Length: 115
Image (cartoon, rainbow, N blue to C red):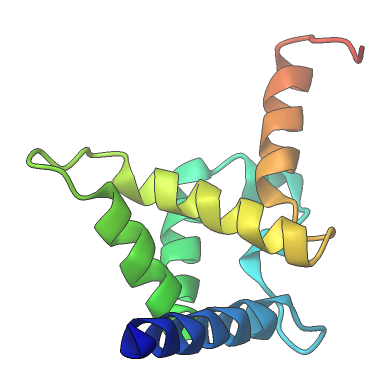
């Protein structure tokens, strides 16, 4: 039982370290991009986020991929991982709200009014 607790504690520390790295002022994370032209290319964003995760948060990426594994892997699994990553980053750093910007852009383009 002690070994499990130690493994979970170390895993938590690794995840916190990875997320702190992409949330730091020194790192220009994809999740903080604001360019309208960039936000319109969702497939490009997903690809960029996956590259960023492979490089800076490999443990988090492995855990998220493992959580999404099913007998029949969905084609949108990378998009789901990218959305989850963006949400996690937003909790750590409010300016990392890429998904919020994309949703706002979609609502605005569909002529949705603010509530």
